[in-house]
Length: 108
Length: 122
Image (spheres, chains in turn green, red):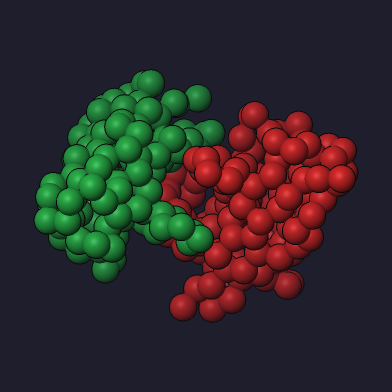
């Protein structure tokens, strides 16, 4: 099983600042099978990024994903008020599919 | 537009079986080669993939739950279902059904139901 470790647990930032979230895998993820999701309280997760770096339809270009192998990053440039939420990474290369523990981006 | 809706009891007693159904609308479970999935999230915690099913009935389960999980599909009703046996308080969670964006198990989850909260308590 691939274990995904996200850091930091919480990121306290102000609107307009840049957020950098990390997702580290316990073993290499093949074919960039890494996704990022945003989740707001009381809502289902929303897909942001797939294939490590491809934005899903309708996702603003202030969201970007990068990385390969075992180290992946989600960057959010110029945080908007609606971006303060939980973020999860997920690998889907092999079974079992697993998720990271999440990073909370909160308003400073 | 594809929509998924979870349904089932919100309260289950310890040692009993949790049963949920996901009803798909705006598309057919039979169309395409998608693996339809169940994911859960304990209150205030992270996400855990439970398992996924193909319209033929082929399944993949999380080994951590495999001994207690059965996922089935009813293509005539455009539904798939989850049964989790011998539940304990640790199984209290929001349960989501979801569909990937692409065919096969190796795909991210694009479409999600709104989720249903199941509490295990006597």
